[in-house]
Length: 202
Image 1 (tube, helix red, strand yellow):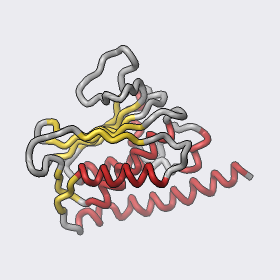
Image 2 (tube, rainbow, N blue to C red):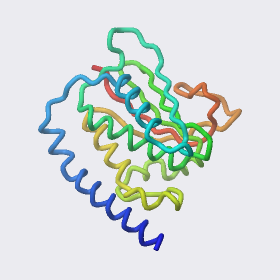
Image 3 (cartoon, one colour):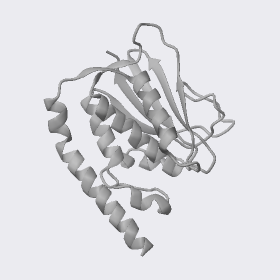
Image 4 (cartoon, rainbow, N blue to C red):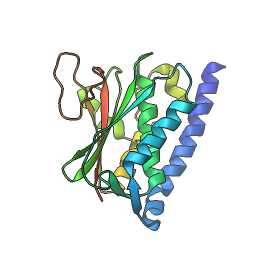
């Protein structure tokens, strides 16, 4: 019965995500882009995420670096679709996170771009799959979370970011003692995967 329930959940999510993907290009082409303050969107999304998730769900920690200017994290786009990307990446990170360990959202200004990274302390991604994770229907998540995902979330997220003139890619975070690079969190997190969004600032 549990297997059947998981299959039904995945089928329902699959139908919803296929429908969403099929209308994505037309919707983004039809709607005019507007200024979106990504720092405000991140604060609202992370706050909502922490409020509605269960006590056993990893906490989402937000780190937005100071950047000069009146609106340093503003981009041109569609706030509902950018919100969808952040939610997809958070759900993905949480599904791979060990119990009691946080998920981090890190925002930085990197040259002309707004960079947002969603990081977890899960098992990471095999190097040969860092690009494959964005293929339609690809999934490599824990069995207990299998029925909750369609395998389309990362593919849809990349489509949205590319339509905004940006990039979305995956990389592995350094393990403890391996040193930190630009964009790493100061929260003591170690290992796991990092999904990075780069969008041109408006």
